[in-house]
Amino acid sequence: MSRVPASPGDSPFQTERHPRDEAPQFVLPLVVRIERSAPPARTDALETAARAVLLLLGDERAVGDGEWADAVRDWEDARIRKVVRRARAAEWRRAEALPGITVTGKSAEVRVFPPVPLDGWPKDLAKLQVSGTELDDPEPPAAAGRAEPVLWLNPELDMSAGKAMAQAGHGAQLAWWALSGEQRTAWREAGFPLAVRTADPADWARLTGGGLPVVRDAGFTEIAPGSCTVVADHPVLR
Image (cartoon, rainbow, N blue to C red; front, side, top):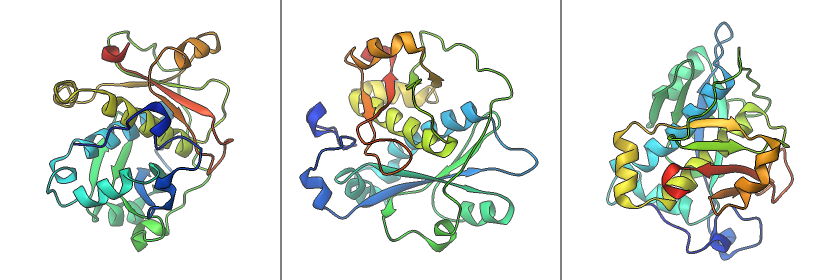
């Protein structure tokens, strides 16, 4: 079973110095396929990345005596870092040849890989571009339904698509940790339905103060340390 933080103050997304910072640091790699002729829609890419994280966490290879379990445990015992890189054409084919899980959305393809040491990326992933991943929605996404889990993005933050994909993955992971085993199974068997939406500014204070899991970014890239980036609004947690 995935590690569950003992309390909000013990969350691996907090920015304060913690003993886990002294442990070897690992990162969860995600690669989004962005072909020049057909880039994915931004919201679909964010939702697909979040599902990819959940699929890895629920995969039998990531728990117990599974082949990825040690790497996942080492990653969860340190800071929960995720890095999104982009690939196309031959780069994508090489990425797909590495152990991992490919998740397909409406327009997006994202491959998630078992955690790797911060300075030990496989060479075919290490050379992929990480910064400046920008995507657009061809039309505004539909309103999220009340019955589905929603990962609410902070309306006051401007994040690249890659950064927002990583933050959506963080939010999905916090929701996963907050669920019981039975609730996790139900979510997984349903195919991990979820939506990623930008919150209405008027609702943000209510969302962050309502007891739902909140991602506070460590500030390694793009935004200030301690920024609230995502609220994980799963119906069973309300």
